[in-house]
Length: 120
Image 1: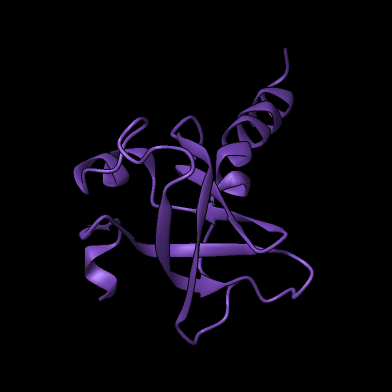
Image 2: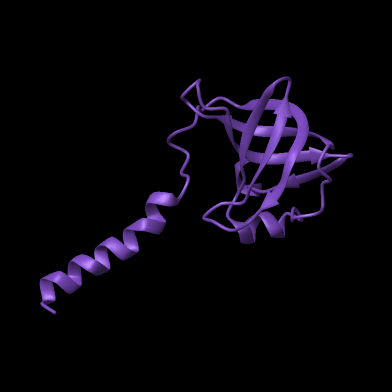
């Protein structure tokens, strides 16, 4: 295998996780809050943990911190039951057709899970 081909393969292999990472650039700068019922439990098998909530007829994608930071905040699978009411605080996606929030805090049952403590 040539050195150039090997270098190209390394670049491609290492770029995929970076492309999957959810930075803050695609989200509005103003703070956003929404309340809804949990549709799907916390999932922590990607660059960021996530969950889904329902507000009215709309299901929202809730993008949390990376799995380790979300777990440090105390938010893991099974903590908040499906059907529970939660309040989400963060930043809405800039595309109004995408119902997604990059989340800083999740509040449930009087408990706040601050997944991005440096952004308060």
